[in-house]
Amino acid sequence: MLNNQPMGFYHPATLVKDAQRHGLHFKPIDLTRSAWKCTLEKEDGDWLVRLGFNYLKGLRREIAAAMIEERTRLPFASIRDLVRRVPRFARKS
Image (cartoon, rainbow, N blue to C red; front, side, top):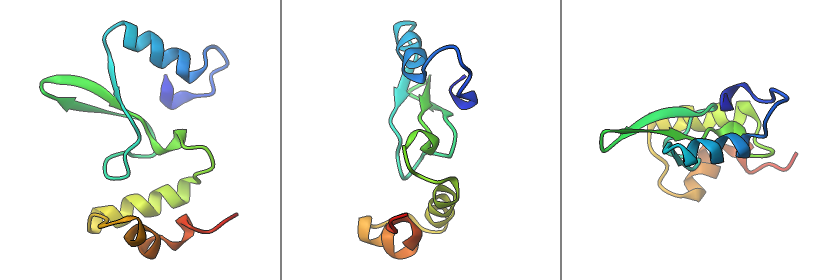
Protein backbone atom coordinates (compact mmCIF):
# COMPACT_ATOMS: atom_id res chain seq x y z
CA MET A 1 0.00 0.00 0.00
CA LEU A 2 2.89 2.36 0.75
CA ASN A 3 4.19 1.94 -2.79
CA ASN A 4 0.83 2.91 -4.28
CA GLN A 5 0.36 6.28 -2.61
CA PRO A 6 -1.51 8.55 -2.89
CA MET A 7 -4.57 6.34 -2.70
CA GLY A 8 -6.90 8.86 -1.12
CA PHE A 9 -7.81 6.77 1.91
CA TYR A 10 -5.12 6.83 4.56
CA HIS A 11 -1.98 8.87 5.00
CA PRO A 12 1.20 6.73 4.80
CA ALA A 13 2.04 7.46 8.45
CA THR A 14 -1.35 6.02 9.45
CA LEU A 15 -0.61 2.84 7.50
CA VAL A 16 2.83 2.51 9.11
CA LYS A 17 1.50 3.02 12.65
CA ASP A 18 -1.28 0.48 12.10
CA ALA A 19 1.19 -2.06 10.70
CA GLN A 20 3.48 -1.49 13.70
CA ARG A 21 0.58 -2.11 16.08
CA HIS A 22 0.15 -5.45 14.30
CA GLY A 23 3.80 -6.39 14.75
CA LEU A 24 5.38 -5.33 11.46
CA HIS A 25 8.74 -3.62 11.78
CA PHE A 26 10.07 -0.80 9.63
CA LYS A 27 13.58 0.35 8.84
CA PRO A 28 14.37 3.94 7.87
CA ILE A 29 15.54 5.14 4.49
CA ASP A 30 19.16 4.10 4.08
CA LEU A 31 21.50 5.33 1.36
CA THR A 32 23.21 1.94 1.32
CA ARG A 33 20.04 -0.21 1.11
CA SER A 34 16.90 1.65 0.06
CA ALA A 35 15.37 1.42 -3.39
CA TRP A 36 13.02 4.02 -4.90
CA LYS A 37 10.00 2.19 -3.48
CA CYS A 38 9.64 0.42 -0.14
CA THR A 39 11.03 -3.10 -0.08
CA LEU A 40 10.87 -6.17 2.13
CA GLU A 41 13.98 -7.36 3.95
CA LYS A 42 14.55 -10.36 6.15
CA GLU A 43 16.38 -9.80 9.42
CA ASP A 44 16.88 -12.50 12.05
CA GLY A 45 14.19 -14.59 10.39
CA ASP A 46 11.60 -11.79 10.49
CA TRP A 47 10.32 -9.71 7.59
CA LEU A 48 10.47 -5.93 7.80
CA VAL A 49 9.78 -3.01 5.49
CA ARG A 50 12.65 -0.77 4.34
CA LEU A 51 11.29 2.67 3.48
CA GLY A 52 12.07 3.86 -0.02
CA PHE A 53 13.67 7.01 -1.36
CA ASN A 54 10.24 8.05 -2.69
CA TYR A 55 9.42 9.15 0.88
CA LEU A 56 12.23 11.72 0.92
CA LYS A 57 10.62 15.04 0.18
CA GLY A 58 12.29 16.82 -2.71
CA LEU A 59 14.42 13.89 -3.91
CA ARG A 60 13.83 13.32 -7.61
CA ARG A 61 13.61 9.79 -8.93
CA GLU A 62 16.46 10.27 -11.41
CA ILE A 63 18.83 11.39 -8.64
CA ALA A 64 17.86 8.39 -6.51
CA ALA A 65 18.49 6.15 -9.53
CA ALA A 66 21.94 7.68 -9.97
CA MET A 67 22.72 7.10 -6.27
CA ILE A 68 21.58 3.47 -6.50
CA GLU A 69 23.64 2.92 -9.65
CA GLU A 70 26.77 4.41 -8.07
CA ARG A 71 26.46 2.45 -4.83
CA THR A 72 26.08 -0.75 -6.88
CA ARG A 73 29.45 -0.07 -8.48
CA LEU A 74 31.17 0.82 -5.22
CA PRO A 75 29.83 1.70 -1.74
CA PHE A 76 30.04 5.38 -0.80
CA ALA A 77 32.95 6.14 1.50
CA SER A 78 31.48 9.41 2.80
CA ILE A 79 29.02 12.19 2.06
CA ARG A 80 31.78 13.92 0.07
CA ASP A 81 32.16 10.75 -1.99
CA LEU A 82 28.39 10.74 -2.63
CA VAL A 83 28.42 14.37 -3.80
CA ARG A 84 31.50 13.79 -5.97
CA ARG A 85 30.01 10.73 -7.68
CA VAL A 86 26.42 12.02 -7.89
CA PRO A 87 26.87 15.79 -8.37
CA ARG A 88 23.16 16.32 -9.13
CA PHE A 89 22.47 15.31 -5.50
CA ALA A 90 24.10 18.51 -4.22
CA ARG A 91 22.64 20.89 -6.81
CA LYS A 92 19.92 23.25 -5.70
CA SER A 93 16.90 23.17 -7.98
